[in-house]
Structures are given as C-alpha cells and as structure tokens.
Image 1 (cartoon, rainbow over the protein chains, first blue to last red):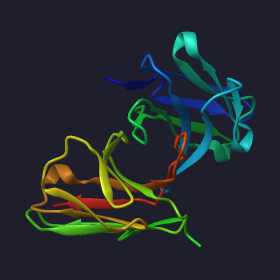
Image 2: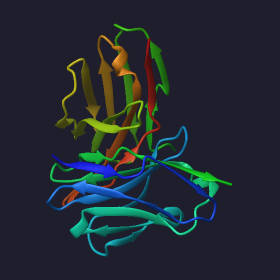
Image 3: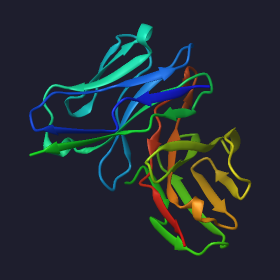
Length: 113
Length: 115
C-alpha cells in the first residue's frame, strides 16, 4: 500500500533560519507529489507540486522542493523562514489510483519572531 | 468569489443524530472529494466523485453517504453520529484531463463535534 512519511512532527525555528522538511513515500510507480500548507484555522493551500520534468520545483512564498526518485523523497526547503510561515505542512502523493491523495501526518512549523 | 465552499463551518450535535455537510465549487471542475482530518491532523480521503459518478470509496462506515446532485456539488450525509466522527471534514475539487487529475483545491473545512 502507498504511504507517506514526514520525518518531523514539530519543527521550531527562529526567523531567517533555513528550513528543510523531510518527506518519503513508498510506491514504486509513477507518482505526482505535492506539498500543501495549512495556516492556523484555514484550509489547505497548495505550495508546490511535481508531476514530471525538472525535479527541483519552485512554489509560492519562496518554497522549493526536490524530487529524488532513487530515495523516494520530496523534501521541502526554504532558505529563510518568516514568522508568517508558521503553519502545518503536508506532503502528499498521488499514485496509480488517480485523484487519490495519500497524505503524510503533517509537520507543524513554529517560527519565532 | 470563493472557489470551494462548505457549509456549515461548524457543526455541534449529539450522538445518534443525522447531519449533512454541503460542498460547492465554482471552478468548473468535474471531480470532487471528501477528506477527514482527525484530531492529530491526519488527512485521509473518504470519497471521490467524477461527473456525479463515485470513483473512490475508501473503507468508510456506511453511515456516511455522499451525494452528488451535479458536478459542482458534493454533499456528505452522516447517519447515527458517533463520538469518533468528530473531526474536520474537507471538501476538494479537481479537473480530470487526458493526462490524469489536476491539482486538488480544498475548501475551508467543516469542524464537526459530536457530544
């Protein structure tokens, strides 16, 4: 069965620190990969996605993610976080059952001003 | 100009009651989804409809019955509510194109509390 694992449950950073959130998935076939963000009390918003092509994808708000097929990973990065990045971050995979997103358990990011 | 909207936003009810949550999208999408987010914020898909046809039906109690009157609406009816049904329910929509499904856009969520 497909699954998604996010390594960090809660990450606490100071403003201007660099961010990397880990995401690994288990599925051997072609996948579409996503990072969604959920700000406190709000709905999920798409940060970025990978369908094909350049494995380094850039998203909104300065976020980027790199798909490494050999490692089944899709880690999210941002060089300098801001207080407004405080949110829950979800990695998701869409595999062979089109339209079915499998989510990781989420990583809570707290940025101290 | 909300893209995916849900009503109600909050729902507090007693065990054993029957309730419905409505979802509407104005994005012109043809596929809609229901997800459940539990108290640990874990998101899991429940159902998906494409052009009013059920295409994804996860292992969900049959007390949950989705209904899609048209491709812009997907409602969720829950019978005999239980304490464990307390969660945030998210609706989402996307477009099915020749290469597969496009990005899913999520609604604001409905916070259900069963007492």
